[in-house]
Structures are given as structure tokens and as C-alpha cells.
Image (cartoon, rainbow, N blue to C red; front, side, top):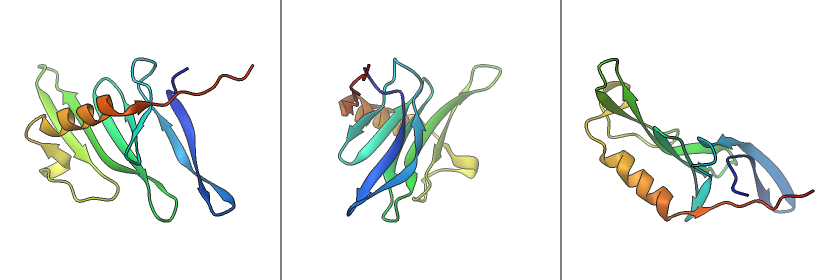
Length: 117
């Protein structure tokens, strides 16, 4: 069973700390991990999460594609912790950041949970 949403916890010494909640776009886009990052993907966005030193679940990088009424696409970049190379309102001029994040996601390991009955 692939995970599509999850509460995130970390172990800090002998304590278990709650960090936050993540969700993906559904069973076609399960949560995945790679190199200490957690990926949550939907059909039009990819989020790369990290847990900060103080235990906060943060968006390391997110890229979203949005379509206007005429079908023109624009790409938007966001981060809780980094300055983004983007124009006003997080707009990036091309889809390379989204393609890069999607490649990272496709190379990541899908999280599987054990179903307890």
C-alpha cells in the first residue's frame, strides 16, 4: 500500500516530535523519499519537503503549473526556506524547475505502509 498522505514525526533523542502533515495528488502520485527529502506530487505541482533543525516540516521547493482561461501555462516556484530564482509572485519563465523536481521524484523511493488489520 503506497502512502498518499501522512502525519510526519521525527525522533529527537528519546522523544518523538510531530512535524506536520503531507498529502499527494492520490494513488497515481504516492509519497516518496530520497536523500533526506520527502516528495508530494499532484498532477500540476511537485513539493519537496525537509524537516528543519527545529523540527518544522517545511517546503524546501515547490513548483506548480497553472493554466489561464486561454490554456496558456505559467510556472510558479515557492520555498519556505530558500530565496527562489523567480519573478514577481513566484513566476518562473520556463518549466525546467518543474521537470527537474519531477525527475527527482521519479528517481525517489515510494513510501509503502504495512496495512494492519
